[in-house]
Image 1: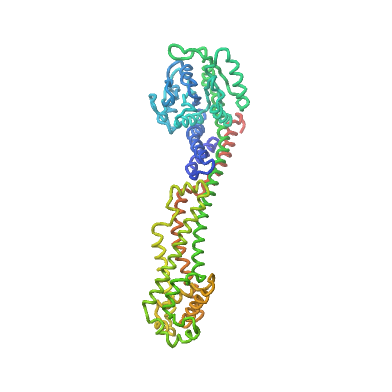
Image 2 (image 1 turned 120 degrees about the vertical axis):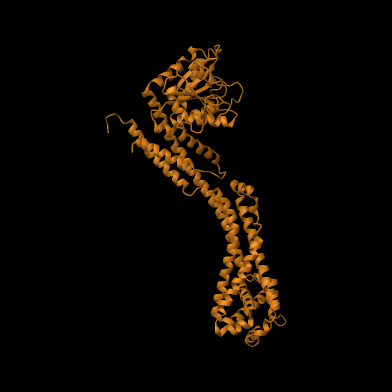
Length: 575
């Protein structure tokens, strides 16, 4: 593969990768990077890819500049024909005009150059239409493009002006004696300097007697900004001819320079190579900025994701603490459990009661309604804990996200994230009921053995399950005063009852399994709530591997450009 072919391949690879370059979060500089990404894409398709494909293609000279600088009049005057209608009203909204020799018309009418613009044979009030004018008096090899104003109040005009200038092989930059020191033109000229673009500057409408002074000052400014080699033309302000053109003598220098350039293949090739090489060099910095910008986007999204995940992990941990430290036995659950096992002398002679379990086991739980009341109390209380945890997770995530501008923007676009989902309460209650079913399944499976079957059947699945839930809850951490004794007694009674049925080792295993099942149910519900946040972030996420692919495309372009320019500048006869 030749150097030129490698360069074409590198451009194509870069163009493909640019499709995945995005900056969804409003980080500092993100808007600039979005514009830069679009601009790089335009440079590739408008200029670099077609130029690499055909190094001998006609040069594109873009005539650009400020509002009212006289660009269209200058183009018409150079060609001695009205090919571009000068704008009178501001902002001037008209299609850009490209003038070329008929032999070059097919090249410019194709999609090889400026593929995003629609070709037209008439000048329209549409900045996205490119008016093509075949002009036999312009030599082949060079086209002039009259571009919109770089400082137009119309956004579309400004954007297109920049796009066209960055698509050019050379610039004919037009300003006026009154505005040559304005900031906007110099921003563009700085871009030309960075890209090593061939530039010719025309300072128009110079007051008689001040031409040398204005030209001298402008030449000094150009030199100070790295454009000492720019060709400078000065035009005196004077009345136009009857056909609306500048006098031939005023533009003859510009006309001769352009016609000589068009007629000399070596000169055209030198211009094309200089601008191509400079543009490729400038792209390296742009691509590094884009790569680093995407990495920052990924980091910011990862931080938001971590904040949401942490809030929901903390919520699950809070539920786990509440279900293991005896907290749940402060209220309704304990009361219903005491109703079930008897409250008259519940705290008196607990051990005596436990020793009598084997003798009076059928009498303890003869009331199914009381067992159901314990189950309902557990379901209601545990669901309430889970609901509180879900609300806290949503609030904590929103609080963390609100610390950054991009987090606030997401919350403003999706305010529902500040509270749990509409179906969360029902999901929490369903998860707890499902866990109670898990517990009943565990005790049923454990109660299948012949030796313990009679004891198990005497109590019933629901009663044993309720005891296991009480035992899981009542580890007594966090309780104070009389609550310790009450909850502890409840735990001891539940534990001894279960041991009487299943044995000590089995009870520990059942309790561990029940807690694991509960944690899984809680995490499942909270994962559904977390998914609301991650789905929003997924929609904003930078495509996986995009920064790395852009970095690889950048490195490939550096290598291909070096090889290509080595080939293209190698003296004839040297292999």
